[in-house]
Image 1 (cartoon, one colour):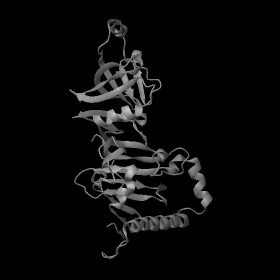
Image 2 (cartoon, rainbow, N blue to C red):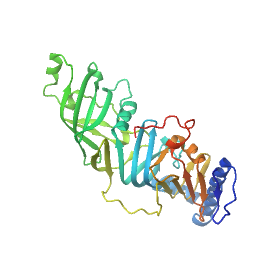
Image 3 (tube, rainbow, N blue to C red):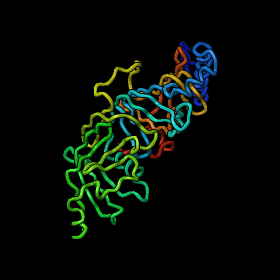
Length: 343
């Protein structure tokens, strides 16, 4: 049963599960908020005005280690390491965990793995979801160290096609697949002749496809637009293949030393304000931790409350919160039927 313990509390002090969680959150948020107003900021107006003029005043620092992060039921990414900022968007004053469209994740440096099953689901359910999309029924696999893309040219009578190529980062931090050759299958003679000498940019019209553009025989992916919210922003600087996984390096290849001293599998947030549920934390000091460190911390933001309810919460000596959470894929089936995300 989840319990909330203040620093030095007796082991036997327990309160009911849901009340304990909310009580811990409320106490930490209230005391932290009072402390920040009395000691850090002399007046409310002095606190509000800089935040309105300086976007950095609203960002929350984020660090993550060994997290399997679910964007949706069928799309996930393995965040091996990450350091960056959570930035509120859409006119929000702070990131709101219950609203994935309220913030972006700005990556300073990271190593993130995505397998081809998740990539396939992202393109079919998000990138090419529009009825006017030029491509349909896309599948992606790794074959001999190259990304192979199969699908149908929807605006050309659903003609089957396939292409493959190596992946490299572009100078502006996007991901480029340079196609070696394009094979259009089951084409009539006239249709085949129409494609002779053509490149990807000639017959895949990507103008209205979010996050995808064609340049000669190259397809360029912008991960900010090709993955569902919360969107990630960051420059891809290297890519390599491991089995059916793309391993993406963001920022500098050598990981910057973390500013926090957390261990295990976790997501840590520090500074400024963030909101979860009905509660707001000022001077954020929140760490979500894995109850079972033997495998990645499996987190699905859409179901984070169920994961919190299955764990327990502690308050640190300086009123930070340490929330030990159960992996999403280990919740009872009644709480999370759709557990698989191609991982």
